[in-house]
Length: 138
Image (cartoon, rainbow, N blue to C red; front, top):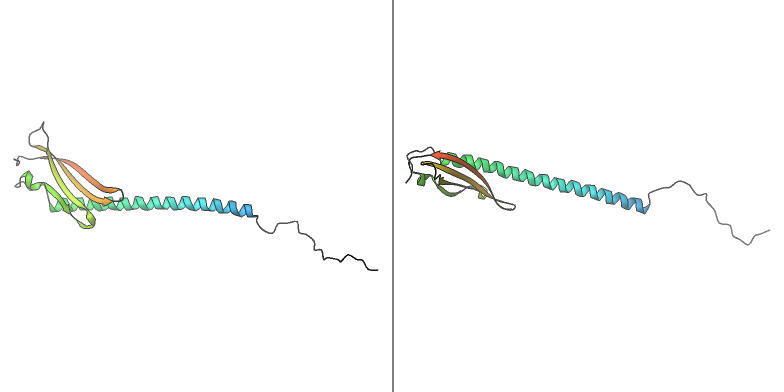
């Protein structure tokens, strides 16, 4: 006796899952991309801070070099001779010095020593203020 229905091989179904669903994969990718974004942003900020620190360190070096090349100790010079227009150094760094007389005190001056350099957000500068007592002025 033959049946008219053809028999299809029926394999038993496994109750366990073999992989991840599409939703789980997308959620994992979103979390992974958020973590990578935070890490890259943090690394970029660290690099910017390190670059600014290196610029500041070089500015301190230029300041010391400018003070050695143009000392204030030379008492034979008049203050006009000690005042400096910007002196150009490597990588765009400039060293300058200016004097301001303190009106309340005779022969006492404020010395503004500046180092400026081109930075990411315009010109950056390091400024040192000191006092100088001098009788050699006009």
